[in-house]
Length: 112
Image (cartoon, rainbow, N blue to C red; front, side, top):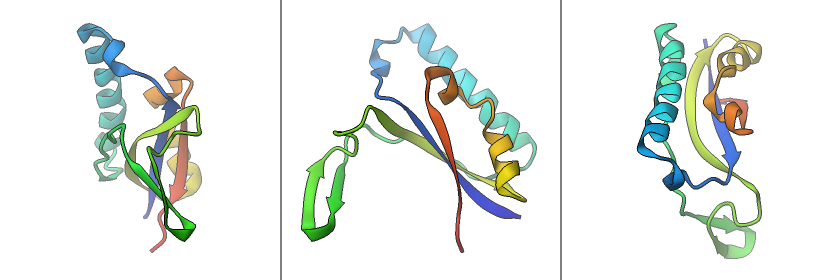
């Protein structure tokens, strides 16, 4: 079985504007979706939510603040899953709550 990284991209969104109930409902969607994949034995490594701040290092030693200063969406988190093929990994990505917020899931094989 191969490993694939699911990268969750969403519009740059301020989650602090959600009420506690809205945030809990969103967290439950994510837990239910990832729990369904885990129940199939397809989680290779639990992903983590990424902090909003960061740095980008470019060729020539140029460092900029924040990884998404020039884009309208951000990489919010990731999950590593086990699947037999890219097609199966893509199927696992269906139902991801990022899609509900006009986001996307990038599915990438992990080389190694």
